[in-house]
Image 1 (tube, rainbow, N blue to C red):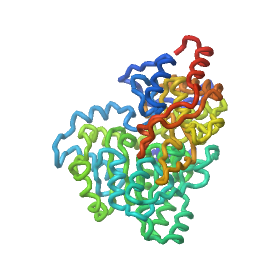
Image 2 (tube, rainbow, N blue to C red):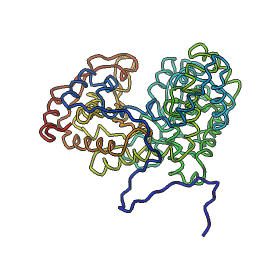
Image 3 (cartoon, rainbow, N blue to C red):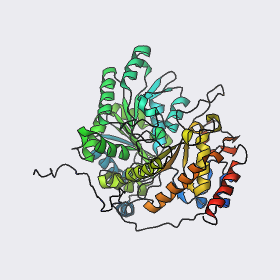
Image 4 (cartoon, rainbow, N blue to C red):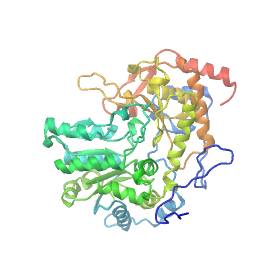
Length: 492
């Protein structure tokens, strides 16, 4: 029998004698943080004070924080140790040099502009490339990305493949870009109408769905044909790398490092939030072309900080350097997707509507099917996120119409999907905690007819989902509490 090639990374596989299919963490816990699970009456009070906006909950009132994976992933022992050797120099820091060299090694791009987080990188890109009347075609938008582009008079065009907007379509790469739509855009408006083309790894707002390496290369070919700059948002790169490795046959024999370089080689610019990629708090822009680098360079000291720190703490930069290297380890990047797949499988097996196949970032519950009696203009995803918190103390995030913003005429576009994201920060939760969350969502689904809609109490004009406040239509939250007590007695 032929032996496996030692140069090709082999996928780890652990089978259980019991026949169960459970994720197995390839790490151990060495530092813990105490959690508090409030009684349901206190959870109701907390969500009322937060205006049914989970962003406004106080963390002391949260049991499992599944709001996001941004800046809340667990650092490794090596990351924390690296923070002790940080060079505090304002300019020319050795810490920056180490981070720059690691990024050059992984992505193969010569130039790097640091920024304090991903949306700061988006701001610099938009200020450099977007002008009124220009378009930015992308597989799908992210909230802050779209806000920066629209603020400067640009237009976001979403060229996601049709499967991407179906919560039930079983397709391994629902984040793929519709290349034919890009060709049609050029035919209709001309190549001069495009500021740049953006690909988002692990499309956040449609369930953390990945794109394939093959699709990225097709987008690259179209960009070369028309002279477009191809920009990769690599914030959720780790999840996308895992899915390419396990779902794309042509990449099965490639290491994670080789897949990463192949993705970067297809792009002109790679930007990222290190709150997700690298497990620190920062971000930046990797650039292949010197002229493009120089176009953006001046905006860093203007908005972020000097060119060798860009608003980041040098201690975080040291941790990010180690975290980037750890991202090349399949044992590290597969833990999140495996936990998410477990949640999705458990919920789906009990009839709870979820986005399938399981993607990255978190498990995504389909609010439009979960509470199909609540109309979309009553913000079903926000209502369900509030109900999940009341029932469990678990803080998820609304990803639906509340996360959009009104058109200039005051009308409200309805989102393609109404999702509640139960994010799974890397290396944070245990399997028993995850199973608790599954149990409470199952109970809520059995009592879903009790859940009602929401209306605005305070609606900001920009990025309203971050700090707007809503209120329930009717007394459905009180009814939910009463049913919980009837079913669970004095249980938390």
